[in-house]
Image (cartoon, rainbow, N blue to C red):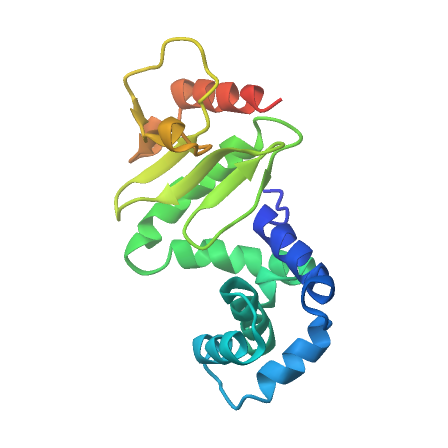
Length: 202
């Protein structure tokens, strides 16, 4: 499975890059201030940064989290890529472990849809991108995987097996879900809808 950095990481990197321009101090100085506050809790440190330095809540939290947190995967490309397999493993630990072989089959199928497909694992799901996310796999229950599909621009008739998520009305990319409970559900029909979602993301 090809893995790429989640777009959210790039968004955070852009916020960090503009930090000095927006606040008058570079990231290194803000991290030193955050660490000097004597707080190990990110939320308490963020509150002190906000109240004591006039920062907005998102900026204060981001500084505190970067300075005090142990989660560089949220901020750095190499760290994200290194941590990505563990994110997938965590989704299929414990009571959902039995779903992992089924998930691996799905990952391989989606990966084969096109040469430019790449996964960007998140905490609770594995989204797959071409230009934007067109599909995602989530362990919905202990016995079922949900394959989310971006079919908002599809103009034909949709199959009864596709559950409308309400995403189109909310402006979400994922608009429909295909439930997978066993190998028999991973076949031509699911492949067809994955290809439709892939092709819509031209």
